[in-house]
Image (cartoon, rainbow, N blue to C red; front, top):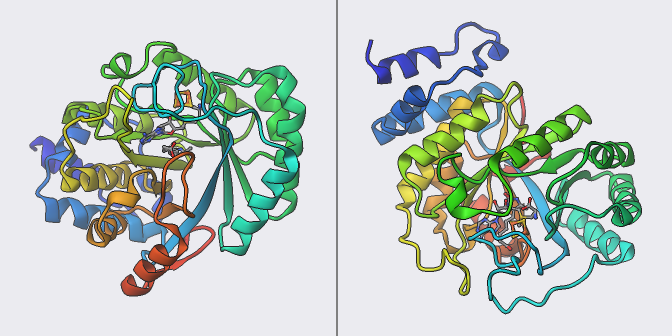
Length: 338
Ligand code: SAM
Ligand code: DTB
Ligand code: SF4
């Protein structure tokens, strides 16, 4: 059997029990074979897998808020918030608890079911933990799912956040282990894995994905998906970001990825991690409706709603509402999980 047939065969739903086709032993060759499938075959496979567990007409909405912006000591080559990158972004301190409550209330009113809070830190300081826990408790009490992304965590910090009611922690691998050192030098791939382990051990759900369009090769996309799909438990949420190019960052001016290659990454993430929410994350502002529709068909079932991501623009309610209406799609807390 050739590699393509093997990949198709091994991903065949085996029985009526949809849990049965979850795999954690994907090889890079199998994932590469999925990336190389004829596009219609890949999309068919992804839709088939998607429909086993989700209603394909439903999308989950999350709202992002930057609770501590800019001045980050890390040197992530894509990021407008790194102090190493001269992007003209004004750095600010951790926002007041009440400001977060206000934004969370508004997000809930707009139909969001998850509130994700991001901080431009290498890691939180212990002196910030009381405020962070108060924020988590307040947002959780509104009936929203809570998510934070604060950089690297120690086990005690993860434990405190979990106790306060944090449901998800976002910490991305961003790319393949091979390409990673060209993107970030101030912390290692292993540092990322260590934090992910600490988050899992604390009992939180993991949100972990990466970025497409940083000049990586197809093999780097394979390596990134492989790292995610071979975790002993797949991340419950897998954000796939399209690089938002920002003047002043080293990645500004990188050759654009072909939109269909972005869709392929979504489809392969869906096939290899069938129960995860696959989030069409950064980059939607510059995407056509047609491209976003293809991403949903390829198995993306979660987006960030609202006018802003952390520091960059996002389509906003009006454009998203019009898109969903045109597509006959609607929003749902669990993306219609079956
Ligand atoms: N400082 C924390 C960290 O890095 O873990 C949390 C915030 S950071 C902004 C969260 C994620 O946003 C990054 O891991 C990266 O995947 C994504 N991101 C940041 N800048 C981006 C950009 N310009 N385009 C696409 N994704 C980006
Ligand atoms: C993720 O993977 N994407 C979101 C979220 N996790 C925190 C962040 C995207 C940030 C895009 C650039 C900005 O707005 O600053
Ligand atoms: Fe800092 Fe996170 Fe941006 Fe990296 S991605 S520079 S860690 S805010």
